[in-house]
Image (cartoon, rainbow, N blue to C red):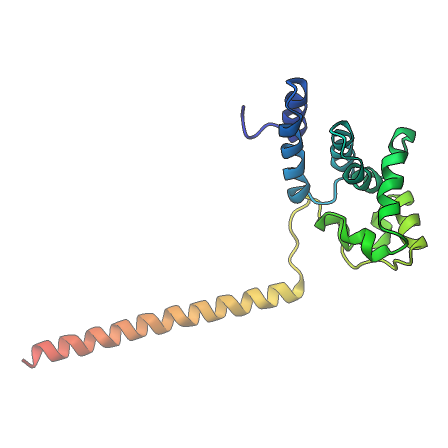
Length: 174
């Protein structure tokens, strides 16, 4: 199996071969690396339902924003377990979905979070297909690190040359 194949086809192949546990591993591994991915959340939630993990399935099906009647019992279970607290509900979300601005959530997720008093985070969802953008602060810090590294290298070279001169001088005076 090529490591470059799409995670969906790898997970689907494992499901077809009856290895649901392996499909779960593949999908779960991608949740951490793919960022805020509604399609992945729904696929993972469906698999968890098939495995009988209703509470965890409800969380991912809720986050996916999917409007499917058969998902409602699992979603209701998840929402009931977190009471009325937006913070408690958000604490169950994967890291990529935890602190987003409200506008990036699907409408039903956004409505539920607002109903629970969530005002919205500050993050934009990380899209792995977009190039990484360096903020001005990070650029300034990177420039400072490069300046320190170059200064250290210059000092090391000057120190080495000075020591070699001193050593040659000592050896020639013997």
